[in-house]
Image (cartoon, rainbow, N blue to C red):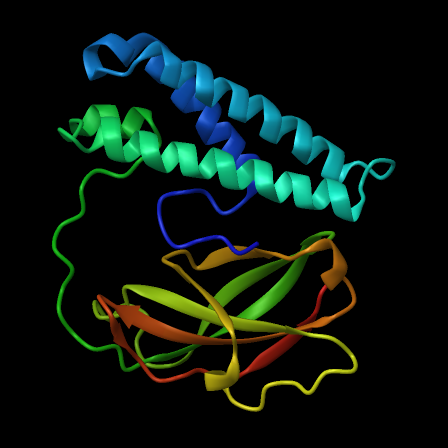
Length: 220
């Protein structure tokens, strides 16, 4: 599972922590923010389900393809609920800056500067855990401080030993957007031992810079 292109943290552990923080803050602000008690109850149930599923998926004894799939499903349900809560109760009407900060969210951004990225970026990979690769953005050409370099679209494909690998970045099948200089790609249980091919495009409001070089890494 790739993480991701917005305000959600990039790891499941961090997502659980954010959800728990939301539960705590909303417990004291639910009346002022117009949040029904049923929303808190539903969020609590999803937090507990995701926590249990993550424990099972990470435990050497209980980690199976089924446990991994159940963990993925539990976190998809949790993130969907968090997005719904944010849309319904944090943005309409929008919370003030202290409220957003208390939830681990950034205050509303200033308008995105115009400009088409011209720099090239790539990634260096490092190991984090089973089925996870850390990726660190590195600039190949251009100025990292250029205001046109607003974020990074990381494209990737998972290739088995008997499959023909992509030859160009345009053939990579999956992608996610991040503004972080370091992020994480989480893979499925069955991807261990396969090769991940990656390439980066810098983006700014839909404007895309040139492709960086393709790199490969073995999935742990």
